[in-house]
Length: 215
Figure 1: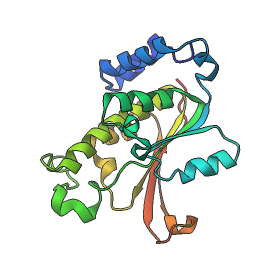
Figure 2: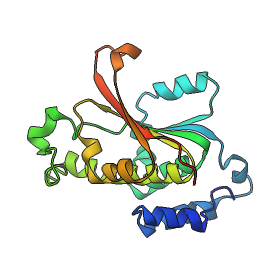
Figure 3: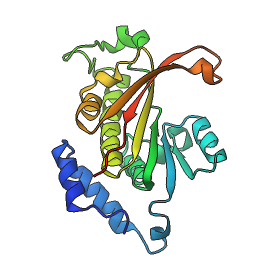
Figure 4: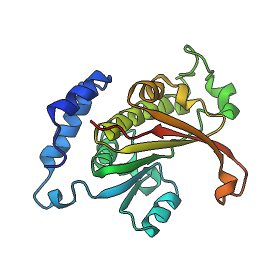
């Protein structure tokens, strides 16, 4: 089965700090595949997580790519905060073809400067995790941790990942994301303006993610 977790990939994930539970999740998904499933086990060019209205997915599909999107607006099953939701998006990442693209529009509400008076997030080692007594902060931290794991899996599977955030977001300084950016293969960071791509506002933004890394 194309979802099979090899010893090399398992060792690389553990080396980069992935919990053993992630390996069990991957193995469970592999074991649930049927013969019919094997025909599409690596059938996606793009998997868009936190897709919102799915504009990027539509553009990629129009360009001839095989695309799937996931967003909580599609239903509770797509909630990455739940075990079922995380397994669903993990399977989406595993379905990516060699050199496929994982695109992440990670919710930014608790990471941007405008909410810092409430979230208590600061750009420091001790303050970046914020006040976890605030629901949006606690959920934001969990999402960041799970996104980091998905990015690790993408790299180990010889795929790319890219995350989009507003320019004031401090998400990349979160230890989970920072670890992936600094330790799990080469990466890039670009600044751009969403207004240049049809957004109603200028919206200065940042993109960061992986260069290709063969494993």
